[in-house]
Length: 616
Image (cartoon, rainbow, N blue to C red):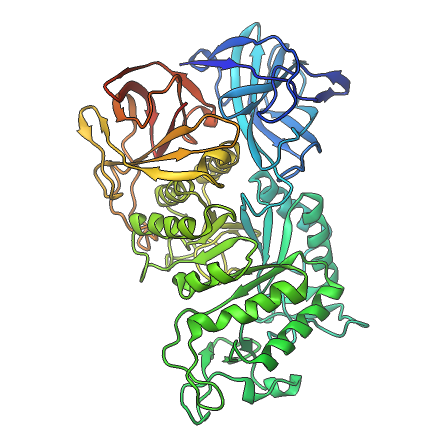
């Protein structure tokens, strides 16, 4: 499996190993000033690696994303054990092109090797940082990590969550370091408020040093400040979370009027509530307000302005509860709840001066909100009741893209292995299938946080166990999602008719067990030739097509290697390459093909869960 690379124009980059050493700028990304540089071609046969996965433990960078031109600092960490003297080659690649490379010596005693380079100037662009280790003149090992060069997180969001607000600064740093290594660039602060109607504990002049959160956990002012600060140092945005219309028992003591409420009857005798009684939390019920009520909006904006004057959050994550049925305001007028959120959300955007994210649970009211509200990202929580299977997951992402055109990135909250015992391990195949579907469709998955991984909508709850295999798989998936983000997400994507055969059998389009599902998109990137992207998802071996997998019954696919693929193309390509989070650590590989009568035929090296085929 040979890896061919052609270099393109010049990157200003420096790579450090102890003292500064000049890098070798073998190419530039499209859109930068062209400078004379010899076009280089090289081949790397990854099958010749004598100890794959045994020499390099990991490669990490110091931030989750980088501003254009910012210095990227990183480390190559080696596994324990003896090794001979050798060298490491680092290659920064835009899609299948090397744009910068450097070689560094490695001593037999080395456990870690540091490096640094300048991020390219092109904004909103993902890169693969590939590492090759040579010992005794032979390729011994290789790996890859993603590098996101973006001036904001909202084109390619990767959302994580934090819940532990009584941790030491060292514990916060350790937790966020793990999320950083998965390139998480946004943090969801779950239930950090004092109360829903008065989120700031204490006053602006004298904020409380500590308080109890909804579930009576301790939260500390210093921990919140440390988490925001360390997150910012890692280029992670911080979002405070609150319900858009929620209040605690005895809300009138905080100055909230029942006349602002939302009711189940026309005579305001039965206020709408979300009942959480019997679990011993700070309130028995969430008493719901009318989001269309101007006085409730005024109040909500003011208490959050107070909060933000103390804590430098970047924005607010606003939640809802989906459809509520027939509801009325205090005067007895029916509330059209799916449309009622828009005026309040627009006021939050305009008057808070912060980024705003809203959760239209199960897409309730999403269409008018996407049309009228300037969200920072598009976020949606899905449930098996309305999104039962893999196909429905992709449909949800497709619907969002049709409305947003990819101008804002999409994050899907889908809680895996729901209701399974917390003492159990997460089911690795179910997580990998869902991440493959979401990633290929153009979304990321809210799943990782300071408790591990989500299995329910209650984020502070005990997490199920993450096996070492699953941890490795998810890490590679996030590296892949970043490295190839310009083909997976963003503007310029259009789905086209797909006609693909594997070993003479037509692929499916329904994500059902027993077959390979495929779909095809064309990516238009200004200043570049269009690329046709074939997504292959392998469900041959899957036990079912339920994404949530409550019973932990999902099974792994049957791996396919060296299989013949025929694909009808929109335009005959000059080059085809493949990449997969399941293969070669996500490093791409150019492959041979034949073309005849509008169809290309090639040998696909590997298909486990998901492989992307790119035709240029």
